Image (tube, rainbow, N blue to C red; front, side, top):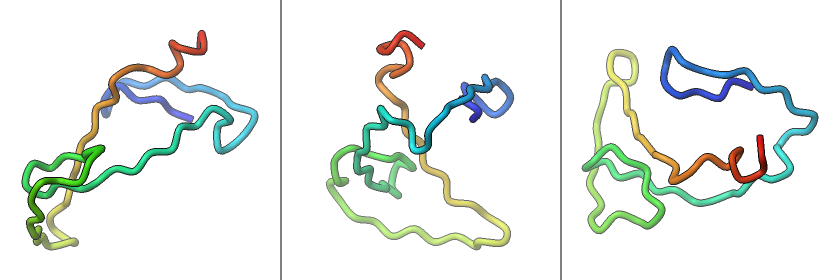
Amino acid sequence: MEVREDIDSYQVRYEDAWPLPDTEYRSLYLDSATGALLEEPPAAVKGFDYEPFSERAAFTFTFADDPSERRGG
């Protein structure tokens, strides 16, 4: 799999199992007002319109830490 820092920077990592055994599942919520993925539902619900063939809907999420550092990888 590719672990990406950004669109051009990544590391290839090989794994023996999928999904990864230490996977931590969490719910994320779309916030169309800010374009973010949130760990809690957004305070206000707002609609979001876009043309799927000429525009895009993009949402970002930044992890607090790198889980591979916790397991020594």
